[in-house]
Image (cartoon, rainbow, N blue to C red; front, side, top):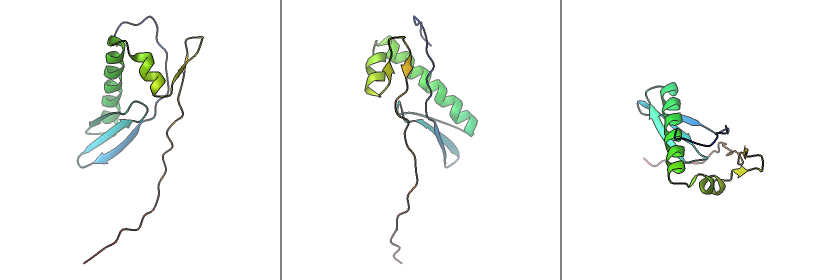
Length: 99
């Protein structure tokens, strides 16, 4: 990552699903996605994509603006409180079938 005055760890959500021959990974908090041949590859590639995204935010001096827009809060102790985690559920729908 780019040079920083400090770092802080935050928990992010990761969703991985199979699409064709690939696994697609997605981080909803930053709306960053990647893919790979395996679940592990997709997860590692997503981690790299998030690092690149955060580096770009630092270089453009937009980190705190984007974190704030995404629901993260910087405390007076220079800690970042995570935003509400996305809620993922399933639902059933009826699909009309016509011959």
